[in-house]
Image (tube, rainbow, N blue to C red; front, side, top):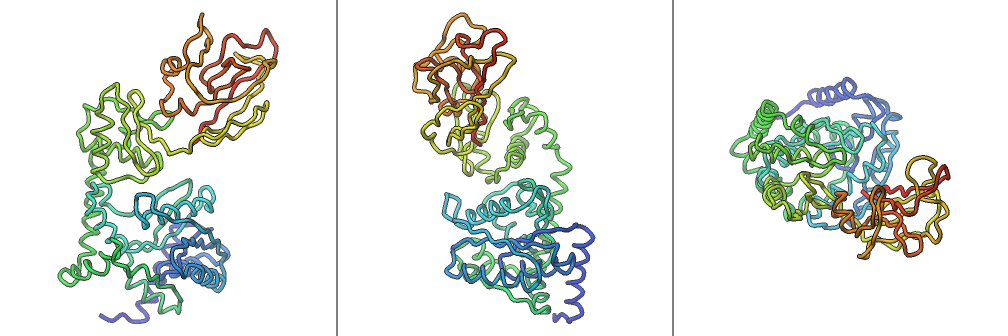
Length: 439
């Protein structure tokens, strides 16, 4: 069925009104140069005024045409009257596939640009939503994953809005043509070696030829799934009283929850700590190999660029960290960056337990084994390894904990332990070891 110019213009004006009514400027627009993002950029400039809009173009350096695309995007933004910020990223294959890594690096770039509390508009549309549904279905996603992308979400301190999520690719192209917009056709979108492209070019056209209204049916299904999840046990409440101050998930009172509810709890926890949630099958591995592991075991399951580990009754997502480098030279009251360890500072204090400022030959080291220390309130020295276990220091932190020595004598271990044999006397000033751990 043909669509008249008036109908096309009305679609454009409706989207423009929706933007003005629901979202306040200034706004940022993720601008790849594709038809969806140039239409969204044009809509935003007309809805708010170009001076209230900033385009963000991420150059992935994957295509041989990446430089030309960047130049095109900067020129188009200038033509619309808005500013354009360009960020260049390195895309590899970190075990999740090139598509996934490109997406992760793109969001890293957005986070680098976006102000706290800012609004980022992205051009995901109805066909993207349908493709995402099938991709998640085929990898065994649970009901939360099958809901698909949401129109509004928060990430890294800023808000993401997807105004075109119920608009088809065909309608977007009609509006872009009607307004004389110029866009890039990425040749990689034709490469059916990629799962999304295979769906788009080989599978979904066959489904549409047999069931022309399938997109709306899938949207209805997603709405039903969302309703079912909302009416089920509120996992956010279950998470609230299990989340520890250091973002651990306390696996307590599990007998109150079904297996599926525990998986949902894991899902919500990973989302809360800022991780991309894996498939249901991978969450099952976490449940079986970490949650249900023996009490004396040290289980670990890889998720994204880190691992899920257990300490006591709680789970933690532990980011991969570089091996600690050579220790920095000690300087009083100066934050010393120690890669792989964190930030270390010898902080001058005048109250509370504190080390003597007269301690000679201070140096920082890591554990080598055999270190001894008499902590506060103890009558004799003990092996540091046993003390760290006793003080319940997380296992993955023990070999990265900064140790402070005076000559050959250990005087502090991180911010957990201080030597009772090396304290400041009376009202004399002293210092403590302040350790800000690496993320």
